[in-house]
Every structure is written in C-alpha cells, then in structure tokens.
Image (tube, rainbow, N blue to C red; front, side):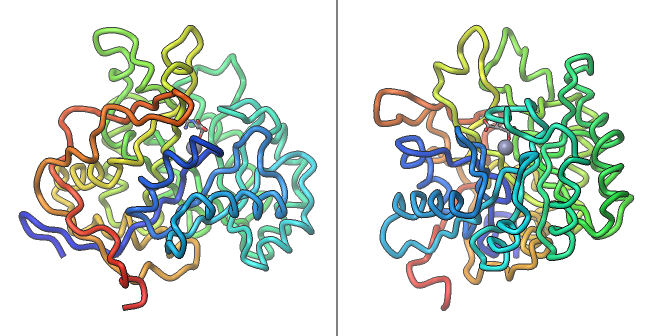
Length: 359
Ligand code: NCD
Ligand code: ZN
C-alpha cells in the first residue's frame, strides 16, 4: 500500500550482503538486522566459507552478534572452488544449513583468489545443484585483464554464463548485482531459471560518480558502475514488477583507509540506507506500488521461501539516522556510508515490531 506520505510493505530481505567477521561484523550487522527479515550472506571471507561446517560456524558467529532471540535470519552460502565437494553441498542444502552457492571467477573481486578457474571443472557439482534446486549465485564478470573493465559483465554473459546454462539447463542461477542493459535483456529473454539481484547504488549512480570533481574511492565497487543508459535499464527492470529482479544491496564494508589509498578496494557500504534510497528510486520512477515486489516478494519467490510475515512502514521525511557519514569499528577503523545526492525522501517509521513475525 502506498500513498503520498506512507508506504507499508512486507518486511524486505537482502539477497546479497557482505557481513564480514569479528569487529566489522558486530558493527555492521545491526543496520541489516533492524530492517531485513533475512539476508543472503556472502562467503568471501579470508579464507572463504567453502564447506557446510564452515557455513554453520560462520552462521553461529553472526547469531552470536545479534541480541538473544532476534528474529533476523542469515541465509548461508558456500564459495565454489574447483574442488568443492558435491556431497557436502547436497547435505548442507537438504539440512537447511546452506541456501546457495556463490561462483566467483578466480580473481574477479575482493577475496576471490580461490574462485573457479573454469566452469567446466565444476560440472559435476553444478549437476547436483540442478538436481536438488540449489541456486548458483554468480559474480558475472570475466577476469581477463585484456577485457575493458566496463565490458566485463557483458562479456561474461556471452562467454561464460550462457554457455554454462546451456550445459546445465535446469540449474537455477542468480546473476548477482546486475549492472548493464545486457544483463537485464538477457534475464528478460530467458525463462524462469534465471534471476538478477540489483543494488540500490547501481540504480542511483552511473560511472561519472567515480570521477565527480576528482577520484571518488567510495563510489568504487565491483561490478563497477556503468554508463547512464545502463542505470536507466536497471531502473526499468527493478521497477517493472518482473519477478526475476530483486533487491540485493551488495553492502560491502571496508575500512575507509583501505579505500582511500593507492590501490583502493572495491565495495560500497549501504546497509544503513539501502531501503530508503530504493524507495526514492521507485518514487522517481512512479512505481512505489511495485517497491514491495522488488524488496520483499520477488526474492522469496525465486528462493522458494515464504515472504516475511510482518511489515515495515516508510514515511516521507528526512532520514538523518540512515545517513551517518561513517560508522566506527572497534579498533579504530571507520567505514564510510553510501551517500549520493539527492538523499532519500523516505524514512523507516516502524522498524521491527517486537511481536511482529507471527502476529
Ligand atoms: C565485494 C566485497 O568487498 O566483498 N565488493 C564489491 O565491490 N562488491 C565483493 C563483490 O561482491 O564483488
Ligand atoms: Zn558482493
């Protein structure tokens, strides 16, 4: 339900999130747990989460960082390598301990050194995943340094993703953090076996933001923001109501000192304001009636999970609590929070209701 000043939607989920570990985990988790029912937790720790036992141990650390009895549900993923054990994946998925598998092409992004070098090497694992319906979440960029960084997603779709899907037609795939019109067109042209997550920042910035008045390390993430026509294509997809597109924030915190440096790392931390910015985008597109589908319904549909049972309310107004300049991490680091003008028009009116989930 939406009117000019108030939107009530089923509680959203975040289908792509980096929570990290240790002090960083403790500092960033509250921003997600306050708003989202569930989140797909990325496995690119150092070392990565590569087996069910490791996913369970990581889940315990996440739960230990939440207040007792908090209903937030981390959905765990396993990092695919050339030597992943299919039997372990099957057991992890069938027991509910693991929700999905993440494919990082080796070297594509932060902590992806042990990723997959060639998807034909993991064919047996992909066959098992297709059989049991376990989603494969794909970081869709080729790693060939000869390929222009702005073309790496489109080239990946044509040279890796599509051939892999032809070899494994029943495999269920999420093209993570889609950033191009090519990705949107590809998903729209295919059947139900593929979906795409979209981040709030790729709906808001184009590649000019990286160079606005100077080099902007806090606008650098992977896949890198593309030209304006791609941002507009992503907006059309997100706001279309098409069930194959859903919110994955790709909130990826890094200490500011590791971004503001000679070789700064990729990742935008948007957990504090992702919903507020997303609502702004949908309002700009005249699509507030479809905000709920994108944030709260399409993701569960693809993952074959029920939507959350309770609701959140957004109301028109400034959201200063969602817009801190940075947050501090015990130990002295700070993480900059995503900010792009204009700032959100919407704020969360009612967060998690204490008895909400089963009421
Ligand atoms: C992510 C990270 O920092 O872990 N960075 C990013 O720019 N998105 C890795 C990733 O999802 O590519
Ligand atoms: Zn990510």
